Amino acid sequence: MAYIGRQQTSGAFLKLDDISSQFNSSTTTFNLTVGGEAFFAGNPYSLLVSLGGVIQEPIASFTIVENQINFASAPRAGADFFIVVLATTNVTPLQTLTIGRRSASAHSMDLHGRQMTVAVRGGTKHPIAFNLA
Figure 1 (cartoon, rainbow, N blue to C red):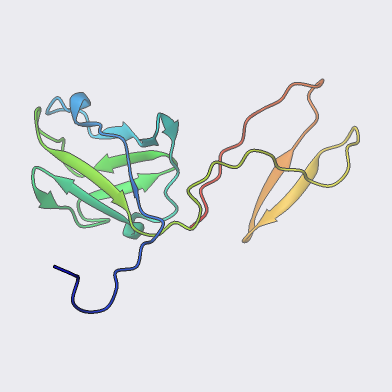
Figure 2 (cartoon, one colour):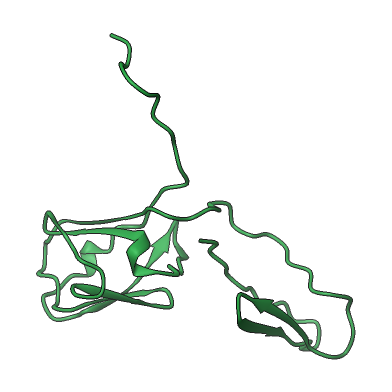
C-alpha cells in the first residue's frame, strides 16, 4: 500500500555511538562519539536522549560540555540508551581547512564570536574537529 499524506522528508539526523556498556551506576560523564570519532554537540536541545526507555530533559537530566554528556544522576548498569542528533547540517567530516596564507605566524578565524587560532608548530599537523549545527 502506498504512503497516504505528505511525503516524509529526511534530515541530517545522526544516531550517536552506544555508550551503555560504560554504565556502572556511579559514573555520570561519558564521551560522545559517532563512528568512533568525537562528536561535539553545540546545544543539548539538539539531542534526543533516551535512557532506560525514558526521554531525558536537556539541562535538568543532562548537560553537554565539549564532546561529553553529563547526566544529573548515574545511569544504572545495563540501562538501554540511545542519542539521536536532531539538528546538524553537516554529517560529512571536514577533510581540509585552509586559513589564509602560510607564514611563520599564527592565523585566527572568527567562529560566530569565538576565536580559533592555528599556530605553526614545526610542520606538525594537528587535527581539528568541527560539527556544524
